[in-house]
Image 1 (cartoon, rainbow, N blue to C red):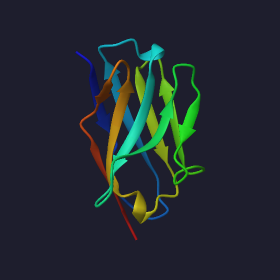
Image 2 (spheres, rainbow, N blue to C red; image 1 turned 135 degrees about the horizontal axis):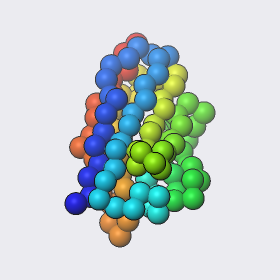
Image 3 (cartoon, rainbow, N blue to C red; image 1 turned 180 degrees about the horizontal axis):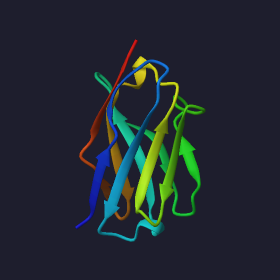
Image 4 (cartoon, rainbow, N blue to C red; image 1 turned 90 degrees about the vertical axis):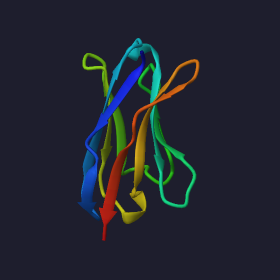
Amino acid sequence: QVQLVESGGGSVQAGGSLRLSCAASGFIFSRNAMGWYRQAPGKQRESVADISSGGRTNYADSVKGRFTISRDIAKKTVYLQMNSLKPEDTAVYYCAAMMNKFYWGQGTQVTVSS
């Protein structure tokens, strides 16, 4: 029943911006933490950013100052605003809902060219 549907991925040149969206359903969105993870070629999946049920945010060191996670409770949607993108940000990005276990979105490709 839990469903996470992502959109907004694509290709952009270095220095550009993208905004990823994750539409959630099947659970009480406002009472759960949400997060974004990414899997880059040759690397393990890593946490990028998360937001608690109370709205507290946390970021990986590699994206601090460039990425912003936010949510719209009415729309049951979490966003990842990505600015000043670098080629090393290229990865498949996954939305996650943190409950008794992790629920994952389908993943969306972000490609940053130099």
